Length: 192
Image (cartoon, rainbow, N blue to C red; front, side):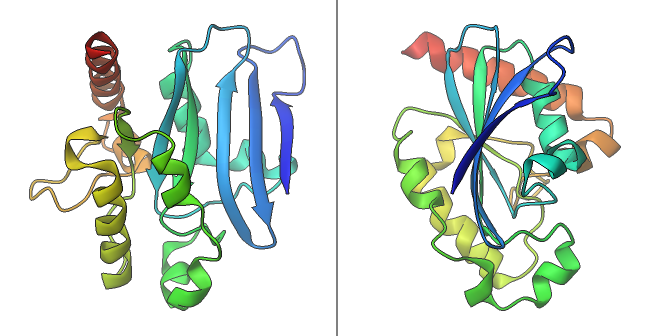
């Protein structure tokens, strides 16, 4: 079921964001975040591994990944759509790894939603290191849809995966990532 709300609730606090999301049981299918009162250029998809703590309006402010993404995109003109390789809500990667592959995904709309952006859109990838072979395979499937040239991310030295924004924040590389996103999106917009 799709739900919408404004964050933060107090209208005097800025910036304000319009949040739209879909949660079905223990599965979060997508999150759309758009800054209010700012002209919208368009939406950019962001692909992560799995949903963290956010599953209702009451838990939104506790989700660190979504907070970091809002900080990256504030005043950029872009809204973001967060999609995940798995749609099962589990913030602990160790626990997620113990969950069967068949339970990690349930009617995950990531492929369908990414195809709406194809072929000209850039896609930000923040999956982190794959937790197992199933994650590697899911990432390969999604990369085929996106196309390697359309990925924006900070890859490891061997280009096997793209760092998560929480890792980039801890390693003091978040500003570099934000500049990379801005540069890539500006280049892409100039080509259009």
